[in-house]
Figure 1 (tube, rainbow, N blue to C red):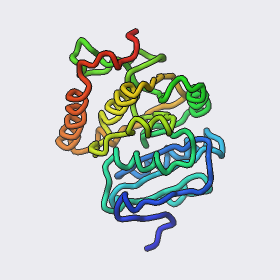
Figure 2 (figure 1 turned 180 degrees about the horizontal axis):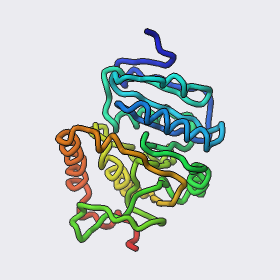
Figure 3 (figure 1 turned 90 degrees about the vertical axis):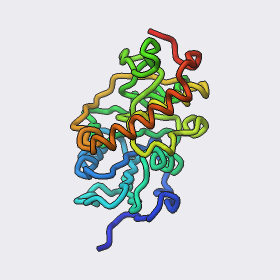
Figure 4 (figure 1 turned 30 degrees about the vertical axis):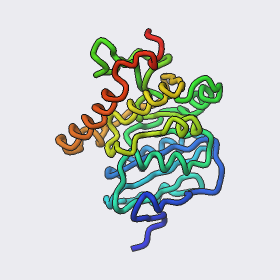
Amino acid sequence: MSVPFKVYKRIGDLRKLSAKEFSTTILIYADGFIDDAITAIAAAKANSSEDVAIYLLISGTPEVGDIASVIDERSYVVQITEGVGWGEAMNALIKLANSPYVIVMDPSTIFEGDAITPLISKLAENNFSAVGWRGGLINIEDEWRSVDDKGEGEVDVLFSYFLGLNKEHALEAGAFNIRAIYYRNADIEFGLKLRQAQGRLWQMDLPLKQERHHGYYDTDPDYRDEQSKKNYDRILARFRGKNEILSPRR
C-alpha cells in the first residue's frame, strides 16, 4: 500500500523534505505511539503561524495509523524503515531544516498557547544558542550525576521535551551524539558540548504541558536503563570535573 510521504531504508538516503523556507522548524522523532505525534502536531499547528514547519521522522515500521492526516504545506513526514537512533535522526533533521532556528520536540509535549514566539524572540537576541522549556544546572556536589531545576534563567543543560536551537550554532558544536540511539541524557550531553563551545543556554516558562511520556514509561525497562546509562557514562567520561564550562551557579 502506498503512503503519501517519503519512505527510505536508511537515514543516509534521506533527502531534503521541503524547498520552502520557514522561520522555524519543529523536529519530532517517533519510533511508535504515532497517535501521540498526531496530537502533538495538531496542537503545534493550532498555536503557531504558517511560517513554522514541522518535520516528523518515523523510525522503523510501527503502525502509522492516520499520520497522513497531518501532512500539509508546512508539515512533512518521512519514514526510515530500517530504523535510526534518536541522535542520528535529530542531526539529519537539523541539517535538512530550511530555517535558521529549529525546535527539538518530544511527541508527549503539547502546546497550550504560543510557545514559539517567546522562544524565538530570545534566540533572536543572539545571546543564547539554545532556549528551552525544562533544564537546569549540573549538580557538582553530586559528582555531576544529577541536574537541578532552578527555573527560568541561564542553565547548563536543556531537555529535549521542547528545545529551541540556533541551527548554525548547534551544528558548529557537533549537534547530538550519533551514538545516542535512545533520547534520554542525549540532550544533557549536547548541552555540555554547547557550553564547551562557548554557547549559552536559557530556560524559560512556556505554555506547554506534557502528556504520558511513552518513550520513557512504555519502553522496555532494561533497554531504557541500559541506553540511558551509556549516554550518561559518556557525559561523565568527557565532562565531569570541567567546572569551567558550566554556567554561573544560582
